[in-house]
Image 1 (cartoon, helix red, strand yellow):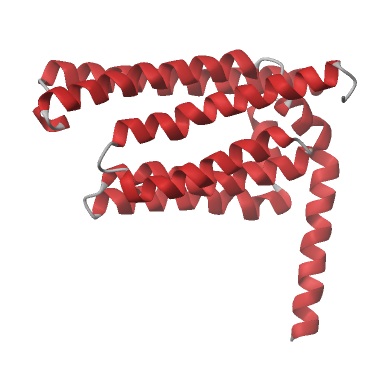
Image 2 (image 1 turned 60 degrees about the horizontal axis):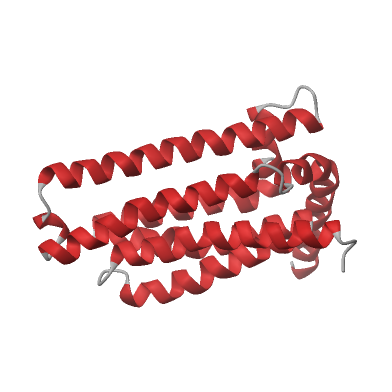
Length: 223
């Protein structure tokens, strides 16, 4: 039984290595720093413009539910706008980079890189954890725990990408998600908008900062 399990494990590792070798050029092209720095800085600014006014209003009115309806509606509308623009921007950057690496590469090729073959066993559980954990947080009446539920597993996803492309950028982002996500478990409901900014706004800044440092190091010949 143990021998068979070891053979299955060796086979899975072999499949993962093959997937990495096959997808490496496309994945590396999509994850290269070009285009991502202004995107992450813009996303960080958008998160700040949502979180900080929200926290000021909570402090002024004592509770989010006490904020006048027009302000609350404006905040949620702005958050929805941020999510739509960031999703569209991310997809546009990935699609453009994929097309440069492979002429006919599109959304299907992008999804294949992250979710096909052995990567399926990392990508799909990651998505299921986010969806189930978020639904559970809402179900038990603590929706703000969605923030650490997203942040903590993102550490493992980011470090997985780091292993595939060999980039310290994703390692830095992964550790930021883990450490801030774990810390927020104890304080998220006391200052949710502050922690939302710390985790995801900070993530954008860490990501952009790491990309700038790596790009500068590459220009200096690795020194």
